[in-house]
Image (cartoon, rainbow, N blue to C red; front, side, top):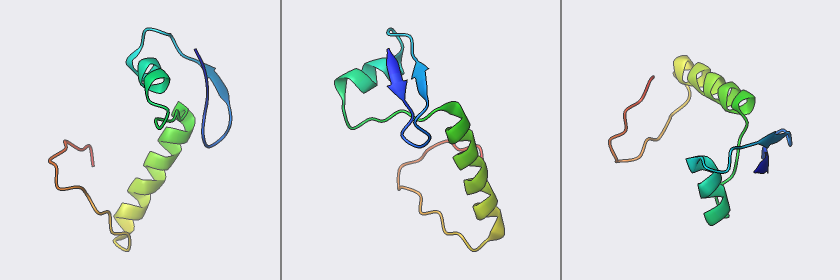
Length: 67
């Protein structure tokens, strides 16, 4: 399955049997982000959190985090 990153518009190939491919096929609201963009956003979010000026409003659900 060919997918396009929503940020940088690179086209990648996903294996049709993966969970991500199934989600993209069955739910059009789900979008794909390439690994480079995902890592870049994750890194910059952690940098903003470290400054103390950025308020990260977490949901009330309990989620395991790596922060």
